[in-house]
Image 1: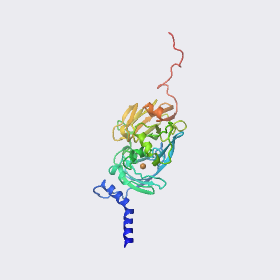
Image 2 (image 1 turned 180 degrees about the vertical axis):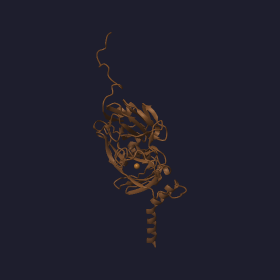
Image 3 (image 1 turned 45 degrees about the horizontal axis):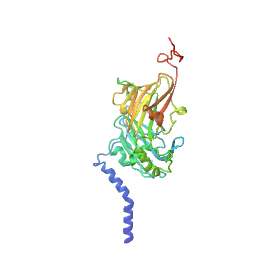
Image 4 (image 1 turned 90 degrees about the vertical axis):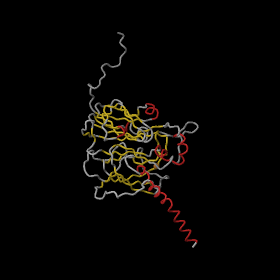
Length: 372
Ligand SMILES: [Cu+2]
């Protein structure tokens, strides 16, 4: 009898985390409605690729919604964000930012999120594109060794951030440890310019800006930790100061500059999606413009045109389109120039083609000032 009682207590104790998880999730879904009617819809698997690239996708789609199946693996890993500076990062699919997903307005995103037992922490995903249950955060909590599948309807077009949000201080800690990415929900019929005319792009790049808060020792050297738990208290102390020690574009210094510069040709139209999950940013393309900029990445708004600098609020992805008219090396950066040049937030675009003297030329080379 005593043994039976003990085993019941033991089984009950084992079950407690699941009971709590179910209860917590159901508190965000107070009345369960009709089942979702995705039966019979076409299913498409989307294979994610590392940023700055977009996964293979159609720019224009008109038709029945589809179910886009996506698999993503969480990886806690150390990354060297610049030579000798290390962070215990938390990532979706091993990259910062996490991969870009692309679907169309009305599609269903069916995500399987895996948290391998090589990780130490609980994670989840909050999609700013999704509606309800903390953007899916309440339905996707996975401990190491678990996976979860959830589905949401991409019912509005735009570019949106997704990020980990496991609760309390772990939310900012996971986000500033790199755990975020973006999804592009293309509008029905494709992108439109300010006159409602269809716009297509030749290339699409995803740039994820990340502020890092790296603790220093008493000599001013950046500390290195064995894992994210060990780094927690010191990192939070730096986070309280609100000023990141480093800013990266796509995970490390030089990820998008020099030999890794983005590429384009004169005459090509490039879609840039820029995201920031925590701090604000202000994007400027030196020597170019935002031909079309969708503030907040909201594609069903009329895009603004001919922009010099565009704002990215912490917690959003913004989309801009530019057709390159001159060859050369362009810097794409945060026009808080302190962040760009002292903390590191910048990318390069190497553009090939013929120079247009009508747009710009040097009329006279530098020479001594003419006294007359
Ligand atoms: Cu996380």
